[in-house]
Image (cartoon, rainbow, N blue to C red):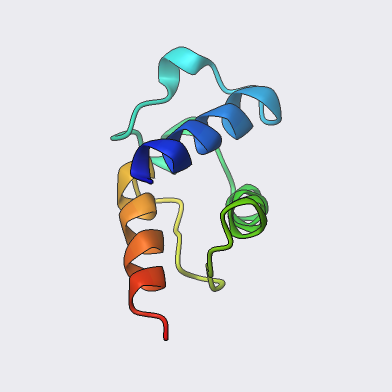
Length: 81
């Protein structure tokens, strides 16, 4: 699931936000890609809808890496009842 979510984030970043594919790695920090909190919110909404995930506001921050955000999202959804 991690790989699928990473691929979707990567696709969103390149297609909608015009981030160079070469810049996108699992360890890159969102801030380093010049993404703001609104962009992260939009990405969260897409992931919620496409993968039936719960991503509350404030779960993902711009100072996180893509991998850290994916781990946090998945951990949040494992703990949901």
